[in-house]
Image 1 (cartoon, rainbow, N blue to C red):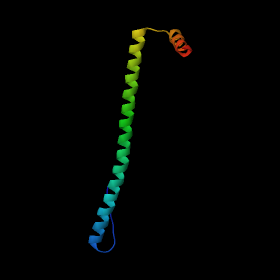
Image 2 (image 1 turned 90 degrees about the vertical axis):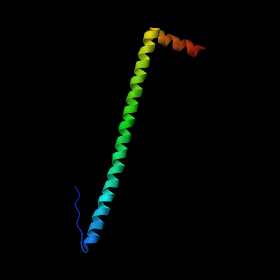
Image 3 (image 1 turned 180 degrees about the horizontal axis):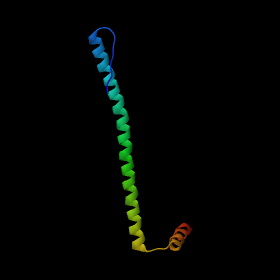
Image 4 (image 1 turned 120 degrees about the horizontal axis):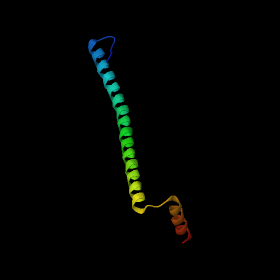
Length: 80
């Protein structure tokens, strides 16, 4: 809703109404863009997380290693 009032010449009142409505629109666009950017970032992070989980499941099924075997392989690599 746009509420405008002015004093004096009707042309000045209309100009003030147009300027304030333009300024409020610009403020809205600035805040709206930042919110949209955050949502797209959240979606990208969620997709990356899901992809990493899928990849981890594939590797665990492929190599079928237990936690102890993984720890042993890490220790062997560190000793080299």
